[in-house]
Amino acid sequence: MVGNVVIVGAGQAAVQAIDTLRRHHFGGRLTLIGAEPELPYQRPPLSKKYLAGALARERLLLRPASFYAQHAVETRLGRRVEAIERREQRLRLDDGTSVAYDALLLATGSRPRPLAVPGTDLEGVYSLRTVADAERIRPALICGARLVIVGGGYIGLEVAATARESGAEVTVLEFAPRVIGRVTCNAVSDFYATEHERRGVRIVCGARVQAIAAHGTPQRVRAVITEDGQEYAADAVLLGVGAVPASELASNAGLPCEDGIRVDEYCRTTDPAIYAAGDCANLPSPHYGRRLRLESVDNAFEQGASAALNLLGQTTVHDRVPWFWSDQYDLKLVIVGISAGYDEVVLRGNPASRAFTACYLREGELIALDSINTPKDQLAARKLIPARARPDRARLADPGVTLQQAC
Ligand SMILES: Cc1cc2nc3c(=O)[nH]c(=O)nc-3n(C[C@H](O)[C@H](O)[C@H](O)COP(=O)(O)OP(=O)(O)OC[C@H]3O[C@@H](n4cnc5c(N)ncnc54)[C@H](O)[C@@H]3O)c2cc1C
Image (cartoon, rainbow, N blue to C red):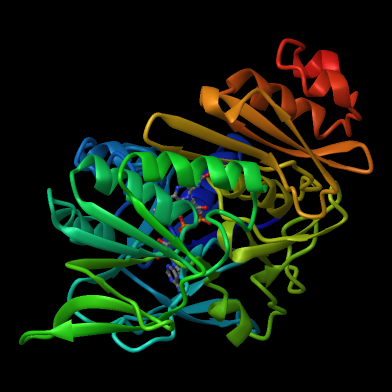
């Protein structure tokens, strides 16, 4: 029985683990250590309402300050863990102190992927992960300011929507042939590109950034230059080229890492006292038959809960079909499941109506779904995909037939 649990990383997964531990009557010592000075907060609004200035800072908090006192959590915020001393079951912090553990949960999240070109350290070049990042970017989103976003993934497109609604002139440079192409089919990419262009966002695909150019003293961003010699004038640049898992604590401690901290289906590393959950963790998915590392609120929430149960000895296999959402303008995209490996896409509804669903099939089985303003479909999919539903193609393509009736 563990008596002293320490969680490193004060984010979504950590909060859910705390909630689950105490709900399941863990009466031992519980410590939360986080590098950011804030209590755990929601990141999704950072590219949406909070960036737009339409949400107060306090509303970001995942739980009020009183939650941590009520749950007897010792918080050490603004403190980075520098090393795990596994033999001694002890952590070394950046203020020189040590914290002992019986069980350790690594919930260290991910960080923006760096872009390896000259000029990323210039004034006016940003990335977006933390509330402090959002507050630095916000003043740049003013009417008429030229914002160049490198990367047409979710964060890039969400910021594009927020910036456009603030009146900024927005250009998105995407290296791939289409935006959000890593996880969606052509129809969904085309739809989003059209929606952005309709509102005045310039989208340039196949654009490989070579450098970010400067002017003035101190040196400030002037333009983004692509390999074909084009210059895109910029007052500000957002780098949105994906995220990398914060797994260095684990790898430096000799724990296996490969695209995240490798854990088993119980969220446990090869060290039986150490678990990992959320963006930093790479788990086997029994449903999909392969390893996954995911970056979503649902994933961090569910893995934080699973890790906590396993840490208490309540053996729980983590086998969930994940889901993710993205809000851009008045469009709500919900992705259920993992579409990788699909061999067929069936559309329900017409993209021109601005409410449609893309269903991804593999050998006839529904493996994933992108729902754009079709809440009934995504809710149904959350049950049908785990049940390995095999829809009738013709009925699936008919939006007059419910998803349940098609399966
Ligand atoms: C701008 C933005 C928009 C997003 N929008 C959506 C969305 O619309 N829908 C959705 O599902 N998901 C969205 N996400 C993703 C979602 O927010 C993340 O998947 C989720 O926050 C991951 O939670 P986590 O607990 O794994 O990590 P995090 O919330 O990142 O928390 C990890 C914490 O660990 C700390 N840490 C790291 N290393 C150390 C260390 N050595 N010592 C101490 N502390 C450390 C970090 O500083 C960080 O505070 C968005 C993310 C961002 C950045």
